[in-house]
Image (cartoon, rainbow, N blue to C red; front, side, top):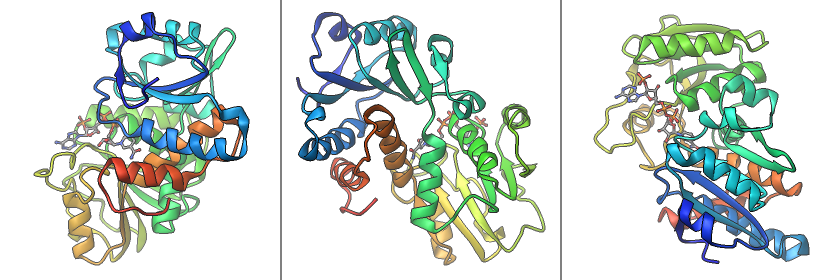
Length: 307
Ligand code: NAP
């Protein structure tokens, strides 16, 4: 089977995906680098473990209205693992058998694991973010001060991860106040000692601590012409800046932070490590994140780097 192709619901109905199939499901999905990342990691696993000889990872474009039917078919066809991306991460909650406690708090799943009765849901985005912050910027979330920009699905996973990891102070800002309020309601159900404060994106909190990390979880920056969501000049000099966006590689936020001499990183490391964690859940094996990074960089036409 061709793992480069983008498959459809019709293909799922008519084609046999032999061996142990895995897949990412989204809409749109054709630009996803997940198949390249996962198939590179599977090739590495195969070098030392024959269990993975027939494992393969595919890409499916499934519209939201077809998702429930597709999920039942993926299960019937014994897809061992699924990654879910926009717009399926929340809709899946009503269709799965079990859910991990952190995914339950985040209110979204990005990883499904097959069992006899259906799928169990997990969320590896928060883990991917915490690994990315640690590896790229040397930031451990425990006791950290975090400014989180956004209140969508990715911000929700990040905020819950911050509280579960024991952040000291979490400042959350969003364009739309109602969505910001929804995120606060979600956080209200998560046990932790993190102190939380909200702000408007154009009005960063006064008296920020000397150091911390800004995490951009808005989609502002996806277009090359997008402005930065906040005024970087207002950050104290000890802050670092992480943008979940990895394409383009350097958003206006990162450009401005870098011009000020602040350490920066983009979301490629988050992408790699959320994917590596998913594959660990399916394979119960250690996964080579460097192989995933090399494949992702190749697909995105970026210079190679380590994970
Ligand atoms: P989402 O649920 O659609 O949320 C989008 C967020 O962006 C909302 O907070 C929204 O604010 C804000 N926003 C959109 N346009 C804006 C604008 N013009 N000005 C200010 N804020 C704006 O999307 P998501 O799934 O959370 O994804 C958010 C970002 O994270 C995307 O760029 C995505 O590519 C990235 N991401 C990266 C990874 C990774 O692995 N690196 C994983 C997941 C997501 P409102 O509430 O005001 O609309």
